[in-house]
Length: 141
Image 1: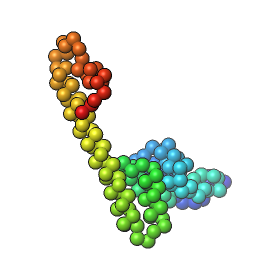
Image 2 (image 1 turned 180 degrees about the vertical axis):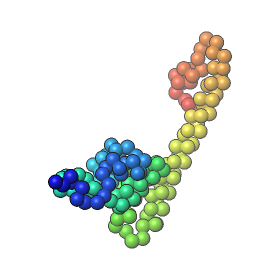
Image 3 (image 1 turned 180 degrees about the horizontal axis):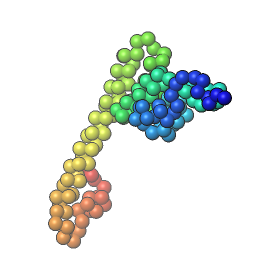
Image 4 (image 1 turned 135 degrees about the vertical axis):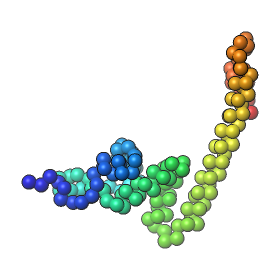
């Protein structure tokens, strides 16, 4: 009697383990179309191959770099449809880099304000709270 293992490949749990991601993450990326649906065995088990693993690693790495799902989708489209994707990928990465730099600038501004508030609150005995006053003032920089 066949157990459904009539086709070589990885089950979803093994794919998740090998790529270091959560089982639900694999399921989600498949659902949103970043990872193509794998073929199934005669018993209905999914069987992922090396291409699925490679693509999943690509998606995970892109997400680690902060690319949103639409940007990852655009990068994958370049992989799938373009024979010379470098210029388009560079443009996408340059736009993302600008966003990252803007976030860094925002974080540095937040750090300055919070550092100043913490210093002003140093002993905690002031009748007014510098943090609360800063928040009421509505100016953070």
